Image (cartoon, rainbow, N blue to C red; front, side):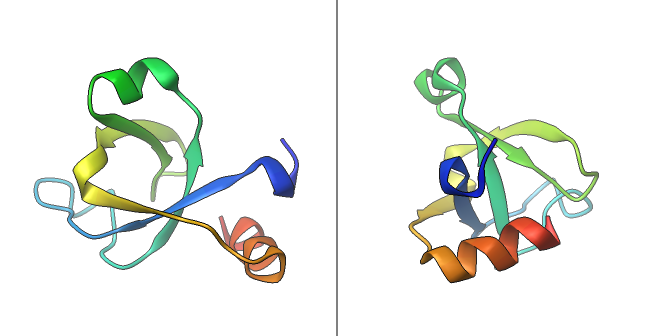
Length: 75
């Protein structure tokens, strides 16, 4: 996956997932159309693995290329 194909979202709620998700942190989104149909989003969380979370816990972001490079390095 290239930097340009990565998508991002910021966590706005972590109720019940306080260990796995940090509020106001930007996460990498893994495309998953089936999850989206069920109101879920696939995120690489604090464990470094991808898991499904409620879409309502996140706001998707459009990052400038320079910011996306920094976030992808930190992920």
